[in-house]
Image (cartoon, rainbow, N blue to C red; front, side, top):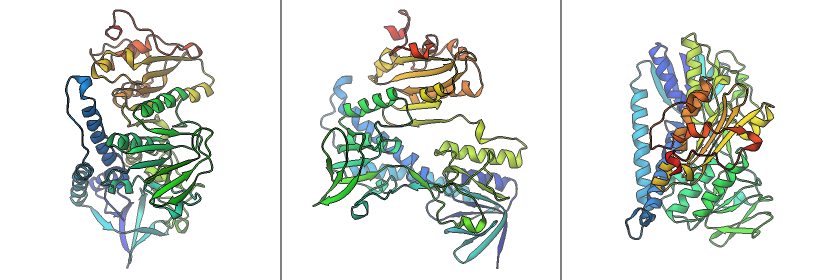
Length: 474
């Protein structure tokens, strides 16, 4: 016998529970289906656990730098089972709160199991068949495991299975020099592993400007991480208890031998086993569900949110998908994916905060551009904290005076970037920030100074000039 609902939500990643909360308040009888852990990637194997590990690794790193700050902590010993236990405790707090929230919804029923479409607005979970006028797909993504020679013959780790590690790898080889890979690289180097990052592209972080990528590489190499870029023709093999990775780099040894391998080569949507073809739901060549500006699929009454729709690969874009869906459905508020400005962070130490266009993207627009750049060595608060690596960089439309993009690599860059992002959303001129009075001593107080020294992009020097009387010039 079919079970009929007003709405079905498939997956409890960032967008799912929030949408359930709204459906509940609207009085809609709703089924939410989850086949694994409540909370999806972010809560269980993504943002929350990894940033908890990053915090542990930073504490270890700072303790080792004690002499720089006037104290001696003695030899620092890392207890990896305790590090993992702390991470698990933080995750458990989040999952418990989420479970309590969902189970407390009067109109929402939590169903455990794997959902597969059997028709346009019908799914099967185990032996149950559920139908609804509205179905919301929120199934997230998973680590991509490419078909590389020898890979199936060796043990390997992904960002998910790394969450089970309670030991210190002797030599961790990370395949992939982008956001996930680099966070794990610095983290485990600080814990005490030897770490090698192997990247196929000519540089780390291919989507970032060359100067940003080069500085990030320098930051990691200063801490001892080995970087191998331009690694083509990858293949794997066992060498006793070790794993050998053969690579075709122009420089360096042709083989890297490590104790463990972590794959960080991108992600795929969890759409391959949903039966989307039986519902007539269209996907692209990579398996991402095609959606319009309001997250609607080609099938009436079916939406796709989060990583599965290919319109954003972050927790914050997933939550924004929920906001867009809810606004259009219930608030008569025509919000759209195209209204948001791309923004994200790389949570190494110091972090990279990004908003809007990078330099290459801005140049392609054909606009007249202004830009500013300031080294973190000129920021008084950074010097006081002993955190002077990196720089701040902003790109502005010379005619409209609107900020087009920002790259803030340095102390608190992942937080400071929002002051620029908010002005970008307001479509206000950069002078709005330039003329603002910020608190001293902070990192943010140098943003007005940076914006006050903009120059045509081709003339930008390695850093912007700082007035002699400014605190950063001390």
